[in-house]
Image (cartoon, rainbow, N blue to C red; front, top):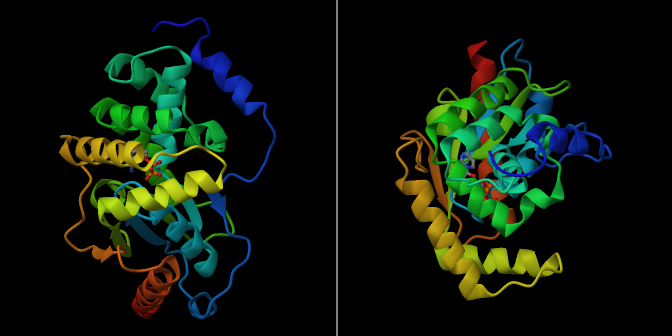
Length: 262
Ligand code: CDP
């Protein structure tokens, strides 16, 4: 691996940063919503898988679901972003399996709140490291562990990503595949970036999403695709609140059914 600093020094520097709430990994302390009040399941965790392409709105949806139903949430993409970030910090090549796997070994859930992970350059590199089977294998355990042992007080977890319903949690209680036409996703991403004060050119964002979609869907290892039993929701013509309400009904029903099975 090239670069001056070893991965471990970067990690300890990151770990020393402040302890702000981590948007990639958090537990909703506030439990509300009718379904949660009715929840009487003992010892059985409830898992929601939310997959879909970039900028489809799955991350926001996952966080809102977690809050509504009192679940912990993990943005699995941030694990790939953290891996990519470590490689880039070392001036390494994200396509090099040895470098990328070494970086993946150093990623842990406490490192996912770095705002630098949201950079476009990191997203691009994330989709490159994510195509490497050794990297996926390395990051799988942390994701499954989170789903199996969500931090208290959560009684389950929402994981969002590309392969949660197909590979990470094939037994998830609810599987959602959130998608939208690429032009709509590009427009949303541009709006989001501009709201954050970042310059964003529609054509560039569109090209970026096209390239990432192609890489994510075309790779041999855990490609982006809907699980056979996923609810596929095309959000091109729907606003975020409509999607949320529709999905809440699905989740509430699944919670009730799970309770009946106890
Ligand atoms: O937020 P956005 O949808 O733009 O990206 P992300 O969810 O943070 O994911 C970044 C990249 O990580 C994706 O382009 C995928 O290549 C990869 N990824 C993956 O392969 N599997 C996952 N479960 C999550 C993300």
